[in-house]
Amino acid sequence: MKNQEIRKLVTAGMFVALAVSLSAFSIPVGASRCFPIQHMVNVLSAVFLGPFYGVGIAFCTSLIRNMMGTGTLLAFPGSMLGALCCGLAYRYTSRLLPTYVAEIAGTGILGGMMAYPVATWLLGKDAALFTYVIPFLVSTCGGTLMAAVLTAVLYRTHALRELQKVLQG
Image 1 (tube, one colour):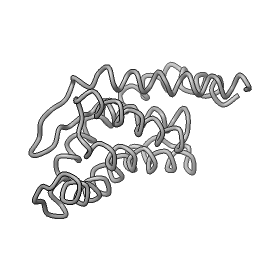
Image 2 (tube, rainbow, N blue to C red):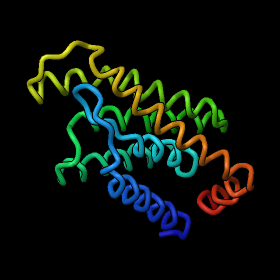
Image 3 (tube, rainbow, N blue to C red):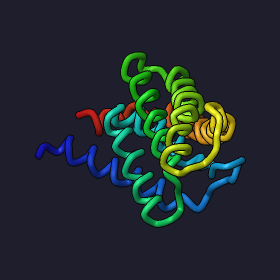
């Protein structure tokens, strides 16, 4: 295994550990539990690792949180779609603003809509197609704002590019 791959795996593991360990920081909104840290991690993983690592991080975080009893099955569609969307946005634009917008649209709108079949078929809850969009938007806006502040600080101190160089080789 190359050093670059090891760095990426270690960074991904650290992002999963960060997201899981801060899973106690959640805000109940409606029928779901809003978890802004996951959305911050989605943006950071998009910027530093790319879309597929981001999806893997979101999946592992959701799986561990569900096994610990601190999450619900609704975490899977929202976090994974958001990670994919913002990862692809950053990969193709290399700009932060489209990455933030893609996280909000991917998790808040697409993920919220994809939570509908999970809620009705797997959890047996009565829900409409857009039931989870508002709670997911609240969660993702908070987490994306946290990521925007952090990436702005990293950008101003030139640490963003340096960290990207280390992880990208």
